[in-house]
Amino acid sequence: MIPLVLATIFFVGIHFVISGSRLRDTLVARLGESRFRAGFSLLSIFGLWWLAHAYRAAPYIETWGQLGWFKPAALLLMLPAFLFATLGTTPANPTAVGGAAPTAQTARGILRITRHPFLWGVALWAATHLIANGDAASLVLFGSLLLLAVGGTYAIDDKRLRMYGEDWEKYSLATSNLPFLAIIQKRNTLVPGEIGGWRPALALVLYLAMLHFHKGLFGVSPLF
Image (cartoon, rainbow, N blue to C red):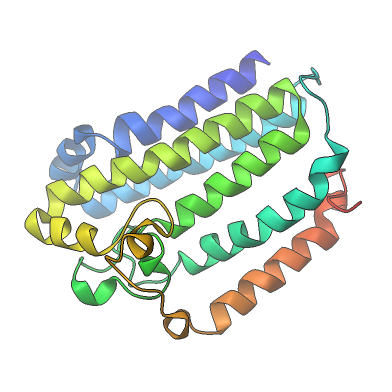
């Protein structure tokens, strides 16, 4: 379990301490944006490999155990998780790496629902797996990824505010971090036609593929 905890500290730490703080600004000023991204990408890939390896090697220590009754709910929750994560790859997303500058025109499509669709997809995926697995290793892994995804939305907001200033403040007024909040507060409106068709279709294909291959890849069937 100790290697998993160390891998978690490393992966979460590089995101909050390096990428999500003013240290990033200092490193970018010294190295340049492209070199920083390349170096941080290598650290992230290593961190993901370490996490996966440590999780597979961790002993099974039951907490609340696998919840059979939760499987139908997990199947339902994973579909919007795939949708958010897939739709969040739009190049017009100002919160994405290398995304567009924040303007009123970029607060469209899935960004009307949340300006952090990818991270909320990860958060929903992590929360679902945390509840469904019910063991200590899963609590460490998925709990840390849930913390990183939700905390990352605030860290990115702070980073974009430092980068764009007043333009970001105007953009954030037209969007919301929490999904659907800007729509509920009538600061934006839902326009399904802006989302398009191929990205939701891709999300559905990926979702169905994961249902099919999940047991072969991870040893556990998500089906009943």
